[in-house]
Length: 113
Ligand SMILES: [Mg+2]
Image (tube, rainbow, N blue to C red; front, side, top):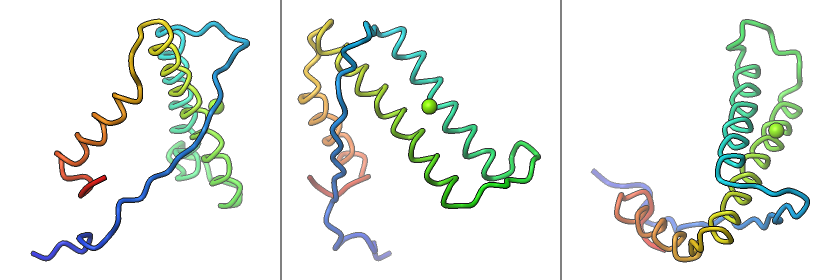
């Protein structure tokens, strides 16, 4: 079977999010916050898809814009947790990113870097 993706170059999305310097996050607080934000994202998608039984009265572009906002909340908390792992536990996130990309290649999710 021919793989339609064989000619596709692997694309990367880079975003830069700040360390929240007015807070004192730790693994527990960031993990809880991550679940909370993921829940808000899921709730919004569920609402949009009418999974809560209510008819969605928002315009599609409004819903999609709010989904993007919530997704960025998730990303911000993930980044905050990375800062905690680096600063408190000396985890090398750059090294972890490389291992992560290697895993994606090994699993066949991407062809190469
Ligand atoms: Mg949120």
